[in-house]
Image 1 (cartoon, rainbow, N blue to C red):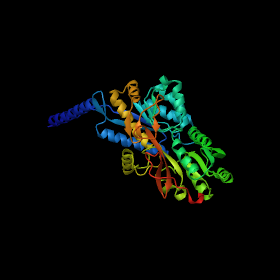
Image 2 (cartoon, one colour; image 1 turned 30 degrees about the vertical axis):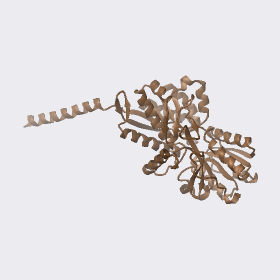
Image 3 (cartoon, rainbow, N blue to C red; image 1 turned 60 degrees about the vertical axis):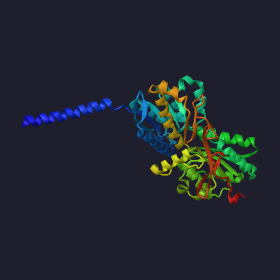
Image 4 (cartoon, one colour; image 1 turned 180 degrees about the horizontal axis):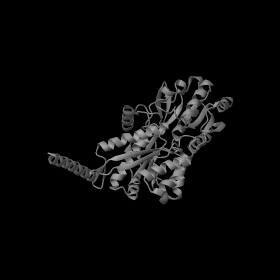
Amino acid sequence: MKKKVFTILFLMALTVGLFWVNSSQTAPKPIVVAIPTALKSDYGYDATHAVELAVSEINAKGGVLVGGEKRQIKIITADTRDMDPTTPIHDALLAAEKVILEQKPDAILIGFGRSEALMAGMDLIAKYKIPYVGSYAQTHMFQKQFATDPAKYKYLFRVCTDATIVPRTLTDSLDVLKNQYGLTRFFVLQQDTLLSKGFMGVLKAHCQKTGWEEVGYEVIASDSTDFSAALTKVKEKKAQVVLTMWDVAQGGTIMIKQYAAMKVPALIVGHIVGVSSARGWEIIGSDIEYCIQTEGSLGSAIPLQKVPKAREFVERFVKKYGLARSQWITGSAYDGAYVLAGAIERAGSLDPEKIIAELEKTDYRGVTGRIRFDKTHQAIFGNDPAETAVCLAYQWQKGKMVPIYPPSVAEGKIILPPWMK
């Protein structure tokens, strides 16, 4: 009896062992994609969900075809915390390097949040030769640094906008405010970051070129929680428009609350995290009414009627995760996953050099428009989603985000606040 039981147990163990060995031999190794980013920031939180959504769709269809077999994508995340103003850039780099060394990813998506971290991290990515499709940090210095040594930095691509592309969606709005409504006086509130510096530089240059009068310029620390002194100057200088770019959630909310409480008679034009969110009305309230903001890349929060692919993505995102906490990069993060998957499949390999060669040939029609890269590996942006990637500007009107520019996606026009008429 004991011998019979032993034989049965032996056969069962052998069967399980053979099954395990067979499974381990036949199950394709996953494609490991790392997401080292500011996971707890509004931008990083939504962007990571956007990548997860794309990957779930890709995996549901069998995965990515590599060397004749379908392989699933496996996501590994690492919190760089670099959108926290108190986090040293060195710590963000260590977090990214740790996930690279420990997880040995085949590629990286989203990437660094703070522009300063990206600039410092470009050498890190080049050192480990990992394909990097970034969709977060947006300093225009990326292209300049890339151009200094294209062979070294060829592993880095950016599918999102940069700090000089996004504000151009607002220059048309400024023209309307000047030519149609007669506004001519502007005040700049600049956050002390590379992103804000580039962003404000474009808007300021446009205003100077088109006959606006600059009545004030304040540079404010990213961790500021009191904007009353600067807003007092806005009132004293009788500014009609406040140009600003602010990507720290707490500070942005406080700025708007103080702006409303002090009854500053100037229209806010730019990008403020919180205000530029589909949940802005819920989070901040009616104080954001009439603010003119840029969404960044299409598909971040607004279900555009004229761009079905962007609308459908936003609807799927909302159904699975709820309204986006932020804007600007959600659509780009989603597209980035498909751009990477497409390059790997075309390469038929996980060899970084082969993936890079295919990324350079990218011509993908995504939720942000048609995605192609220029010689510095920056996605090309314009005003027609059939030809380029596109970002838009909108105005809060009666609790809704109304697209106002470019014409290819616009659904309404600028409305001047009653207190400015």
